[in-house]
Length: 94
Image (cartoon, rainbow, N blue to C red; front, side, top):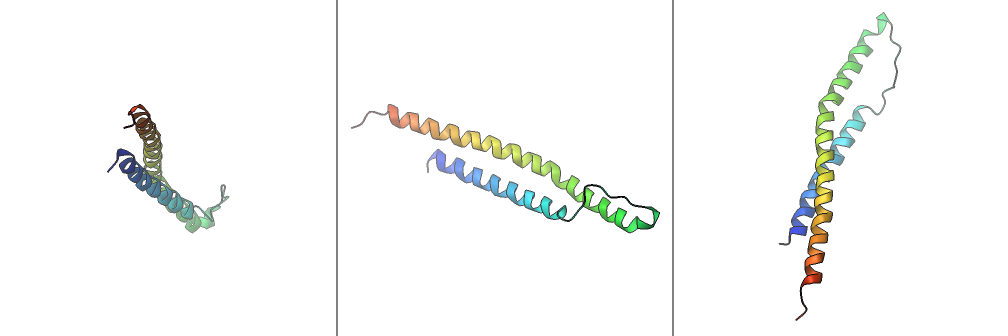
């Protein structure tokens, strides 16, 4: 199996995980407001908002790691493609 195929498969897995994490994070915050004005009588809504923020904060480090991983794998994919292309161009035709 060629290196390009292996790097592409690893990149596809990393990109899929990243997209799944982004979709999960967006479903958590889909119907949430940027700013809420809560009084003392809205403790239930305040707790609900805190729960949602806690979930988003848990997911955020994984999103960052997968974003960096996907970027590195993208660079590796391009690098491997260029490396194999240069090798093919330098190989004498028989």
